[in-house]
Structure formats: C-alpha cells, structure tokens
Image (cartoon, rainbow, N blue to C red; front, side, top):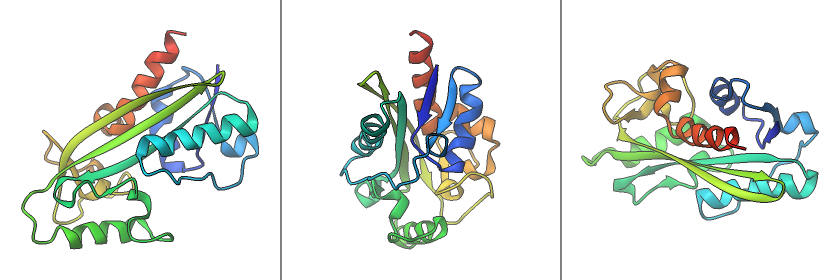
Length: 191
C-alpha cells in the first residue's frame, strides 16, 4: 500500500518513518508535486488534520493521512493548543514559541500539560481519525537538544527527562505522535 503523508515537515517524517518500518510505502507532498501551502484554518486539532487530508484527497484522489498536534497547558486554559505552531506569531520560530510559553508560565505553579496529536486517514474517500495523548509538565527552562518544537520544555509523566533529552526510539514509544501513528499502523495492518 502507498500513502501520502500530507507534510513536508522533515521533523515529523523523521519521527514516524521508523514506526512505519515498511508497513506501507510512505510518500510526502514533494513526491506528488504538491508545493502549495495546505490551509489549516480550523479551530480544532482534529479539524486541521481533517482539512489537510481532505485537501490532498480532493486535489489528487490519492489515499493519504495528515496530522495536527497541539501542546495544551492546563494553567493557560489549553493554550497554545491548535495555535501551537504559530503561538508567537505567523513567522515565529520554535524558540519564539518556547519563549512565549515560558514567559506566560513564569509565576505559575501548576505546570500540567499534554501533547495531543490527531491523524486523519483517508482511504478511498473514507476518513478515520486516530488520537495520541501524552501527559506531562512544562519545565521552567529548556533541557536537551533533540526533537523539535516544545520538546525541550516538555517532561512526560513518569520521566525525569524531556522529550529533547530522549532518543527518537524512546520518544516514539510514549509520544503523542508515536501513539497516534501506532493506531494508524494497527488499523492498516487489518486491511
């Protein structure tokens, strides 16, 4: 089976490729000559994932999946949530987003947070969604250099290191994206 992952984000591709491990042939947007920016205008993580996969299905009629992820911080009423990638503004960097979170969390003792990923899969026009959630907390400062996004300030429950201090293999076993991807693979293996 061949599936298009509706992304050109090299960090995401690097994370899920070892999980797929030959379960299906993975293509990305560049492979199908899709170079335009796919809209992400939904107010929900699930809505954005669906919007991206529907866009690819409608334009290319090819089986595909898309994901969207958000960091949801309890003390910030679920922020940054659906705006996680652009929390500090449209052209912001990972560091800009981290700085904004750390500034907002400066005098807050409740550090509870969770990462949530939703994958939208479209096979022959039919959509299914798979969700992965990992609970944890926001640290007061960055630790580690691996991973991407908020990984240096997110410490998963039951661990004394951040995602940015884990190997890719360690992170994939417990991460939001790893859990959602495993549900996707389990489903595809039953087809």
